Length: 243
Ligand SMILES: Nc1ncnc2c1ncn2[C@@H]1O[C@H](COP(=O)(O)OP(=O)(O)OP(=O)(O)O)[C@@H](O)[C@H]1O
Ligand SMILES: [Mg+2]
Image 1 (cartoon, rainbow, N blue to C red):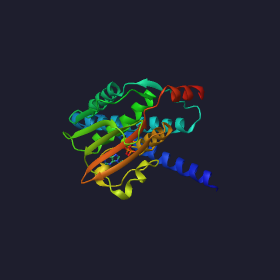
Image 2: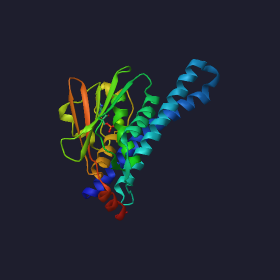
Image 3: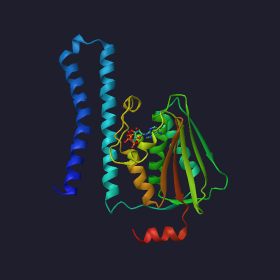
Image 4: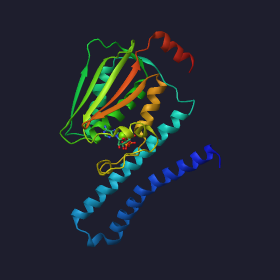
């Protein structure tokens, strides 16, 4: 088998495993309910249905992420750059995540000198959703997630930082978390579900936008930093021409 075939075989094997786990659980709990409906009390029925709902959500998340990966690998995945005021876009992203993580606090601080940015709004939002969702997902309820936007040291770039005080990430895992299907195997990560594709997709999008992403975690304080070019009409026109 050559490397490409091996990669493909590994991909299929990982995907099959990721799909089988929630499907087995959905089938198991629905079979139990159908076969023993009269013997199960209402409380347990509710519990089983909750598991079925959670596992279905897990499958939807996985399929959506796999579609994103495939799209990013295809040349047809065009980015549409528009002049964008990122503050309202970030506010919208935060309110979407807040809806899912109601007890977390989200603190947005956009430096006053941030110019409009030429970016693909959907892709920008996908990047920020992944990072803000992770920050909430891997930290305690009632904790605060900080999102700050400042000019970057790199001229004509902005820096967006997402910081949480959660389970933290070991330095040895900094690279690994950005690869396909990678989750850090510890009891705290296992408590929440995920496909391990979010950061892989995020890094891919950021790099397609000519930006960079990095992580730094110390004393359980984890910061992901995205540095993006502000862009201009010329870049925008060039992007348009190449579509
Ligand atoms: N803010 C964070 N704090 C601690 N660990 C994190 C954080 N963000 C990511 N990780 C670790 O990196 C791994 C990969 O993150 P990634 O977003 O790619 O996948 P995921 O959250 O597990 O699943 P999903 O594909 O649903 O996003 C996570 O499983 C977790 O172990
Ligand atoms: Mg994630």
